[in-house]
Length: 115
View 1 (cartoon, rainbow, N blue to C red):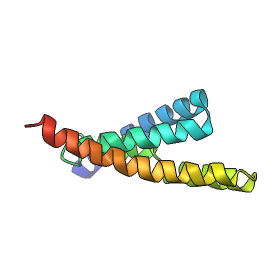
View 2: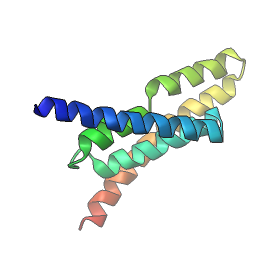
View 3: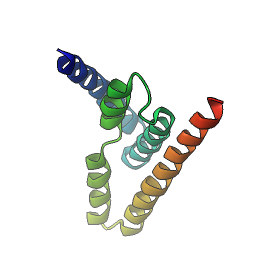
């Protein structure tokens, strides 16, 4: 029974994260929207750092759906194939560097705000 509750938590979080990602990307545009959800998701993941009671809902479900690697990869390839190679390279660098930096910032904030 525990597995069913866990799966439901992941599913509910995934539904919410996917809807938020769709709305943000649609309103802000593909490139900026994908960067925004990826960096924000990394920051929140760092804040949670898998210690949260809501880790299955928030980290695995919501953030997993919000910050999909497939959306990032697909958009990078779309930019590249349309001849926007510099934009594609900058898009990849921003996502990776800003995402890792945001995660580290989240860990730092969690550690220092909890004290």
